[in-house]
Length: 146
Image (tube, rainbow, N blue to C red; front, top):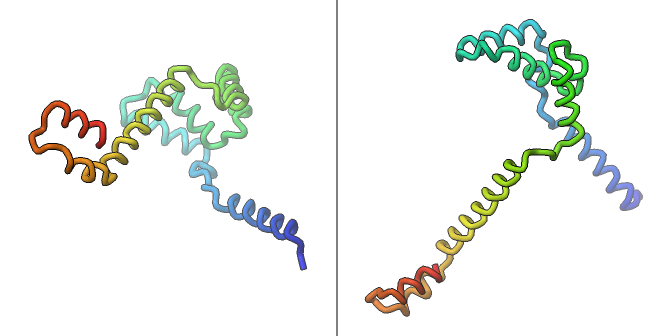
């Protein structure tokens, strides 16, 4: 009879195997370079972005083989340096982006609290003792409770 350690190891290996099988295949994999470049040029022409076609070509070639970007001849050295930096420092982003994420997260939390307060029965429970004539004090109490 296998030990609990062996069973957990087998389950872990099966999980790793299935999670690797479940990964989405790169949709650009296997498309010849010339075909990709022609599709990018057609897209850029169709959407009046012909002046940026070189940037799109670099992007699609890196997207096709993101691990092997060092060997893409269309990339300049500064492009490779930027990709190396992104590989080495995945979490290095501008402070404005982190600030935006923090503000949006706080806003989402406040919205969630507001919705939760409105969905809870406290509004119905505590509204009945309030007087029918809503004076300033009753409005403030109602606002605080729900």
